[in-house]
Image (cartoon, rainbow, N blue to C red; front, top):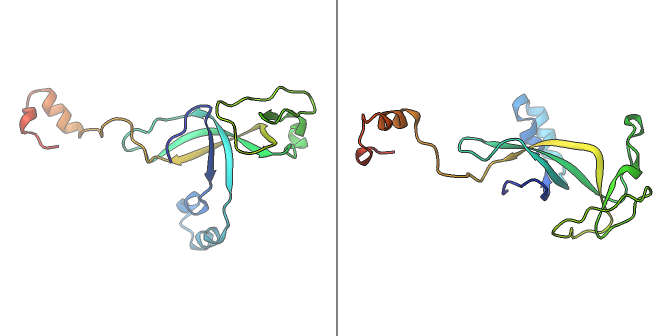
Length: 153
């Protein structure tokens, strides 16, 4: 997956096996392997780190998108009519204006949920810049201990 930018809409699947891998529990792993995963759509609202060499996962915050008004969470005082429509949809019970993405979504009747951001880790398969050199190598070449032409990286 290419690392998304702020404001990008992205489709993703959860990986339940990877999510619970740190538990080292074979029963949980087997249960997770049996789960059917679905595709979610969200808008990236924050990127918490960059795809630097050695960074296995990128942390992002996203707001989920749904088709149709969400159910709401009355116990948290979140009502369905608080959702924001996304063009071409323009219906909202409170007449909230719709968001108009630069690239239209391929689905009808979509809404941004209110106050339902989720924090995710995305596998980093994109590295920005060259790989970092070994710190000892950098120090030795910086202080002239090794000529650059003779050093193997």
